[in-house]
Image (tube, rainbow, N blue to C red):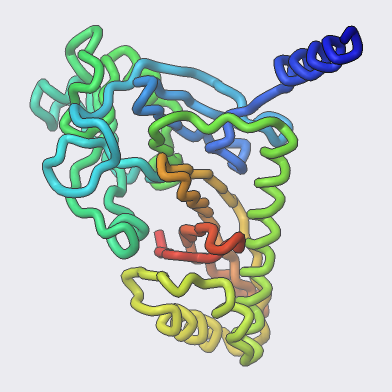
Length: 299
């Protein structure tokens, strides 16, 4: 009996003391922050990376949509779940007073929304409010902060670079699971980079094998994507090599347990003494236990 009690005591002490991290941000350049919003908790975290792990740099109360659940269509009063980027800033003097100290425009709907999930609508912003304590769950779909919090957030955001992850709940992972998940995605990205070079050499099979049969994008089918890479490589002449710099990896887990990984890559192509870059966002999901690219877009 004593041995049984001791076993459970050790088990619970270990579980209680196990360290967790916010797992929505798997990788981020050291000079950038990420914004993570929980709709259930009405809370926003500003995340930075320290020694390869995400830590909270700041946090704010954040008000989201009047209706619960994920956004599906224009005017449904819901805040979308997903990974977005702040693409523009609207100053206070250009907006009605309802928007407070200003607004950051998010790129909703992104390629995943439009071509895979089939969501419509637009005008999803992070904006301020003249109210000191905006009522929880009261927005039309935007993310609302009071003016003081919005002004603090302003200094963390770089346009077209800062990712904004909106979730029903924050994802918290034990350290070992966090490392395992990050390694799995990075291994997949390395396969993707190698497959790009295989396309240049005339072998498209490795790249095609990385895409989902449910793929959708503005560029068209998977075969259209491969053709676009062929055109890109054809413009060089000499054998190029490909490098990914300023990589970001964000983890997006939906309430139905569907998993998406958003990978931002600044692809550098070198041919001779010429370097060109292409900013690309890959949307990756899990199908039958394997990672597959389900959508992508140039950014």
